[in-house]
Image (cartoon, rainbow, N blue to C red):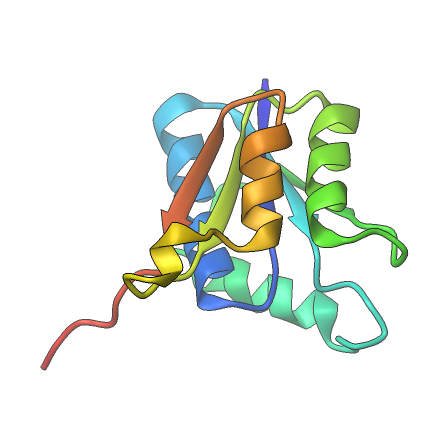
Length: 131
């Protein structure tokens, strides 16, 4: 079976992608990467995903890439892709929130968490090591 990882141009999404590759190694599942960067606003979308994959230590080849429709909002794209591909779970990245911000999730993350028919794993961005 497969799980879905939402990828955008952010440190959080790169952490979610790295988590996905680690999950492949651990479980043997395959991964579906939903590329959310594919739009006129991101002319280098393919290179963003390629660079993120190349930054992962020993990435598996057991993944496929799907792209969202330009007309879809992020949450709808993730939920639709999970349903269309039969994904058993969803992995998303989330940025750190302030104490007040913790009262409210981002609208996309909130919609995904509340509306998904499958389990959702939320991954924080990996902090850079302190010197």
